[in-house]
Length: 255
Ligand SMILES: [Fe+2]
Image (cartoon, rainbow, N blue to C red; front, side, top):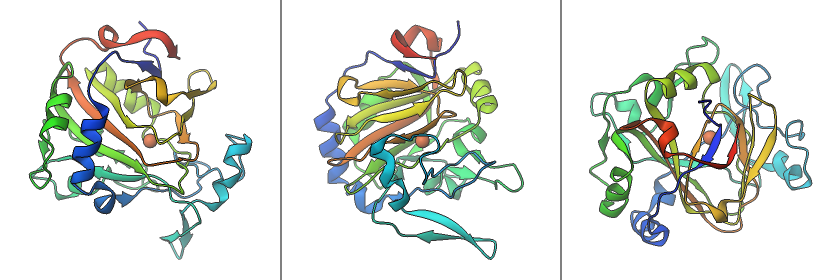
């Protein structure tokens, strides 16, 4: 069966309880900003001119924090709008980079890859965070073990920049090898996920107030609309213990 780029997963948990637990660990103070530079060839698009998402609500994209190239270095340009922050909840003790980062390599050398794509052995939970309920819920998913688990955070004023996290070929290999890319929606922040399928070029938006968990192929360009309150999501990359198609609810799936 063809894997959708987005599909609901019927999985229940207490969103409020996870939210409180994460906030008690000061996740917003610990997160690092995850923005992008405008890059025509690369996988990242800040989309300041609305080439991808021309809708009125994205007119403010120009005002988001972003990088610009200066003497071969990336320089952060602070805008009036925040964007995604991320915080890893798992890491690989033997790989220091996995505590803070999500990618390794460079776009110039064409070897930039997400860490969950490169390191597919079981990752460990961070000992400095006290998140027993969050861990219990994640481990009750139909998975054998977790790789990267990260919080994706936004705090007003914030718009999620247009980007991809990986390319279609490596994501296909990842899914074909029995791994998954799940999202647990902890607080939607009054925003929606917007995406464009790389398979059909169709653009779609997800009404996040309706779903608690989903599969998302992050090789699609995606972003969020402006948040009204704190948006908290858990991105979980893991080895499944059953075929992906068995856990997906295909009713409103996007291909
Ligand atoms: Fe993303």
